[in-house]
Amino acid sequence: NKALQVMSYVWIAQNAILALSVGIRNWRYVEHCGMAYKRIGVFIFLILVFYGLYTMYQKVSEKKSFYFLLHRNSWAMYAVLVLATFVNWDVAITKYNLTAKTANPIDVPFLTRTVSTKNLYLLLEYQDVLAEQGDKTPKEVKALLNGKIIRFNIEQEGLSFWSWNYADARNRRYLETIKKNKN
Image (cartoon, rainbow, N blue to C red; front, top):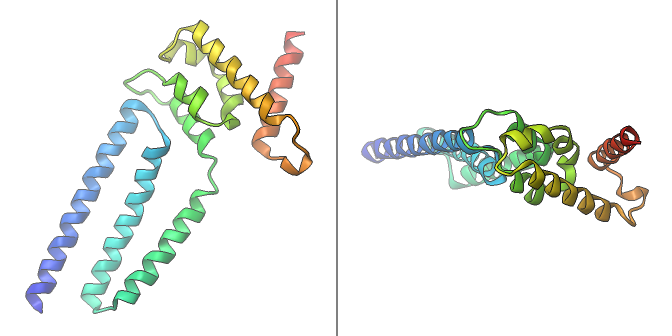
């Protein structure tokens, strides 16, 4: 039993090193290319992996049952996923990509087409940064932003007060401010 326990600790350590190297590579990728949904997903997955390795260590060292692993890891996964819903990832991704100094230019099509319209006010506020540091010309940036504004307005048509949310209200307020400043 002692040899099996030592081999289990070695296996746990190997997996921790592997998970750490994946985390470092993912962070380097974020530094190089910017933030994206799947890169955030990798970080969330790694948090769960490290917790799972910790509970596996507890299981081996304290001779716990498989139920212990299943119970603890299920609750951890549930808690992490619930906590992840409190973050507006569209805005967080956009803020990071607009303000971070990455090696690659800002991926304007990703921010204007893939990310939902929740980030519209940020894109309009930072459109000079998009034009200067983005991978599109200022004219293309303007066209992509106009397309996003049209998409936002189409989404908002026919919605009642039951559909109200802060992100959409902030976008509407920002668009109204821009319209007033033009007049």
